Length: 278
Ligand code: C2E
Ligand code: MG
Ligand code: MG
Ligand code: MG
Image (cartoon, rainbow, N blue to C red; front, side, top):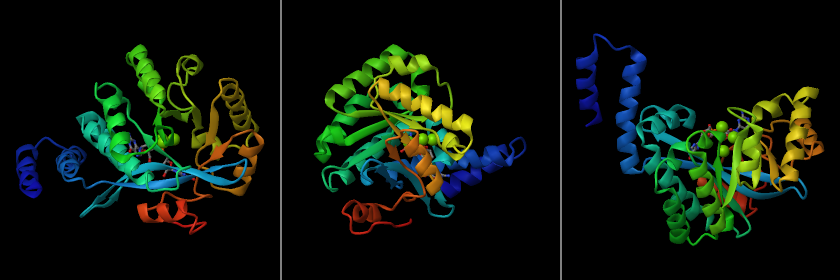
């Protein structure tokens, strides 16, 4: 069916459309179908706590295993899903799937789920979180929602109120990709969050004293506000030692593990395998 509509689309627009637009439209059609059919997957990247070097949880990262295009990365389809509104059912699915999976892990492990700003613009997010918890039986404190500062751009008051209600349920809030995007320090005061995740662009450059100073400053502010700090994208032992020295509490990155398939994550969670690669 997708093939047929592809052909029609192509004939109709052939004259004026370039290949990129054509490809995008095709992807949009296929995504709509994949959302309905549940053709997406979550991979899980371990999060290591530095104090005792224990795995404390996993971040769920979405993938689209496409029948002909191979594994499509979220960078290629999340923006499109946001523009078309498909992120709402897709994000809802991710919450349910991640909570169900995490409920089968040892019960001190958390799962982090990325939530798009677009999901906050819809009224159903809170209900979606609450019903994912109820359906899976996952304790609310084991669920962490990762949001970026972009959620505050529109109607910050409504978003902050929503975050407070989610936290009162027991869910944790993490501020993702910190240091990219808007990064107004005033957000840090208004935003009720439990964790800051420092974007990997800073970690990549952490051997540079300026980048290190920024990480140190963020750790200082976070500590003052009672939040923990995760360093994203740790790839080398040198980076691990430096973020430890700057006071980060948790790390994530290829040095620890790449995102894992569901079964590998379960094994990893049960400690049956110390290191594995997807
Ligand atoms: P993010 O939430 O900041 O996730 C971290 C990204 O960094 C992931 O890319 C992860 O695979 C990658 N990463 C982790 N460690 C390393 C490392 O050591 N080196 C390098 N180079 N990369 C590392 P991924 O899985 O491609 O996801 C990209 C982005 O897509 C995510 O960034 C997030 O913004 C978005 N995303 C992924 N899954 C979802 C989802 O379920 N919902 C929404 N709304 N967005 C999602
Ligand atoms: Mg994230
Ligand atoms: Mg991030
Ligand atoms: Mg990101």
